[in-house]
Structure formats: C-alpha cells, structure tokens
Length: 139
Image 1 (cartoon, rainbow, N blue to C red):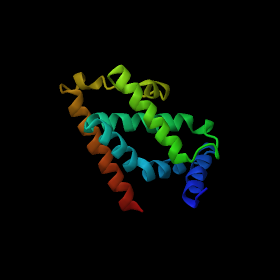
Image 2: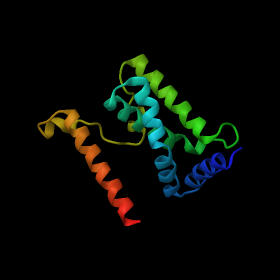
Image 3: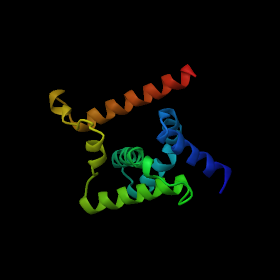
Image 4: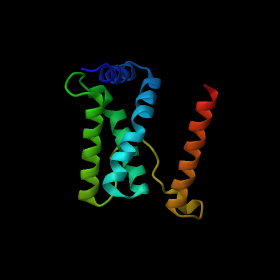
C-alpha cells in the first residue's frame, strides 16, 4: 500500500472515529477527480455536479462500513461513482436516496422563489464556491 493510500484510509478511519474535518479533507482531496470522472462520461456539467454530490453523500453514509485493506479508499470512492453513474443511466436521472437518508430537503424551493431549479442550483453552487473561498482565506 502506498503512503497516499494509507493516508486516505486514515482520513476515513478518523472520520468514523468522530473527526468530521477528516471527511472534509478526504472530500477536498478527491472532489476534482470525481468531477472529472463524471464530466468525461456524461458531458453534462449539471448532471456531473448532481452525481458528484450523490457520490460524496453515499461515501459519507458508507464510511463506517469501509474496511481498510479491502480496497484503497480512492478505488472505493470510484466504485461508488461507477454505481451512481450506472444507476443514473438506468433510471435516466440522479438517484436521491442518499439525500433522503441524510434528511436533506429536496429542491422544491424553486417554485417558492419564482425561478427554475437550474437557477436555484446555480445560486447554491455560487454560495458553496464563496464559502470554500472564505474557508481558504481564513486558514
């Protein structure tokens, strides 16, 4: 096992042990790779963003079941991504099971804001980008 793979496994183990910042580091480390994985396969930026969110939501829920040594953590994450892509293609949409299991609200707020879901997604995306920027600046 490489030093990098051991570090990734350690991040998941620390998250399961109660360190939420460890999952944040795992997420940040692999976000670009998972986005690229989906964008190459779908060619659709919005679907890519949705699928990436589903992957990390599923990984967050599955982290306690991850067994170090079975697969490197990155391979485990790509396995989740492959399953999410297959599910999306089979159903023709992004599965929202992980969102429901995390008790997150659906995007039904668009009608309340008198705009489309796409506009809401763009606003959320911009807000998250701003938040990431503020976090980086505070370090």
